[in-house]
Amino acid sequence: MSTPSDEELEGSKRETTVMTISPENVQTEGAFQFSLFADLLHGVGPGNNGHHRRRYRSEEPNGNDMNSLVEFEKWNELNDDCRMEVVKYLNYNDRCKLGICSKRDYETVKSTPLDVYSVSIESYSMVTYDNLTVTVHFHNDYNPGNKIQLIFSQHGEDTLVRWLDEYLKFSNLSAYYGWEEKLSDSERKRVENGTLVLKSCNYEEEAVKFAEKWMKKCNFELEDIKIEMNNYPMDKSQIKSLPKCKSITIGADDAETFRWWIQKLPKQMENIKLIRLTRGQEVFIPPDLLNAPQIMQTLEFDFWCRADFSDEQFLNLKANTFEIDCVNITDQGINEYIKKWVNGNGAPDFRRAILRITEDRNFDEMTRGIEYKEFGDFNVYQSYGFCRFFFEIYEPLRCVQICSKVDPYESITLSITSDDVAIQKTGHRKEKNGETYSEFSIPW
Image 1 (cartoon, rainbow, N blue to C red):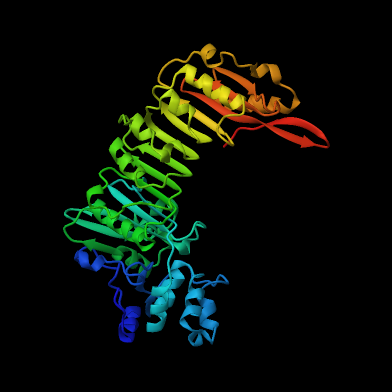
Image 2: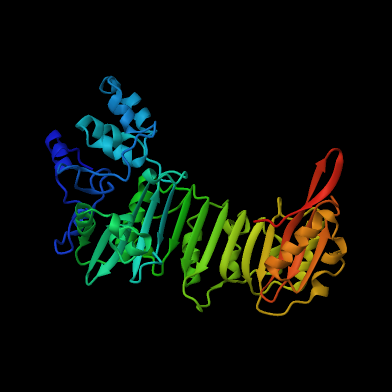
């Protein structure tokens, strides 16, 4: 990114062409390069009694933003290292404000590392036409000042790009949310004009390029990723690996897209979620992909597609919480899984395993050689409310409690419905006034 002159910086306070271009004023792709301050600022437009300046969601000081710097008379006397250390604590919007104050401030902000916590690409469900919304979080605190959110859509051969929150103020949702009557004429015009048009390009590819540009800014070291779109342009992607990713959600209608993303992940993950996007579309995840260490060793996963785990793979999962559409896991496999937990060899800190089923299960096979109590047989004071609540939530056809042989105060619930087999850690060892007892609750 080139360094602006003082005159250009002053001009940037007056000009309102970036992200305030009406659809008839078409821009070429080069206008959409997303430099740190100009193109990624929230809301550029006229306002404040006729003065052209940058506008933000909120201008109130929060005790730790740029307003404090304005009052700090010695700011310009600090050396570059000290200035960068201060900028580290500013959120993204405040960095943008500071960056347009002077050439030196611009260089300070440009030189200060900017962490990207998460990036997501997904269709905005409350908009009827085809679209993709890209959200970039710079911190996991979900502070609005640390987030940018754009909606990309196709308009003939061109792509329209708008700030999502401002677009919604003028969309058909405005009446629903009561925003329409709150907009002044100047605000309404700014929302109408707040559209960038990229000539002769595909909205999906532009959304991906924008998202990957932010991934690249942090050397692809973001922690959380959510991609829900078909036809991700993998052949044009810049992603080689995601070395610090901990949680990922991928929505697609084919296993090869899942494979492409999983291969980019570190071997030890915290959470993986795979979703089929099209209702009724059958997506089948083969055993070789399921055998990837990213899946076998992750702490949690949720697959809304058919997962062809073998009994052996099922028994060796490290996850303490998971849900799958079950294909080939047998009643005998479920029996061995329960026995492992009973004997103290199950997944550490086990919480829940939900096996969504497509065929009838044999309860006797699943519980062969395992001691259990029917729910009605242990309705003591501590568990009566739990049993009633469990039945109201799950409406099981059969439900039993199975105690650990390592600690009899610890137990799991095996329940069977017409839709799934659920194994959940519900009984927990507690002590009070020297007395040991079991407390029951559903893991969420």
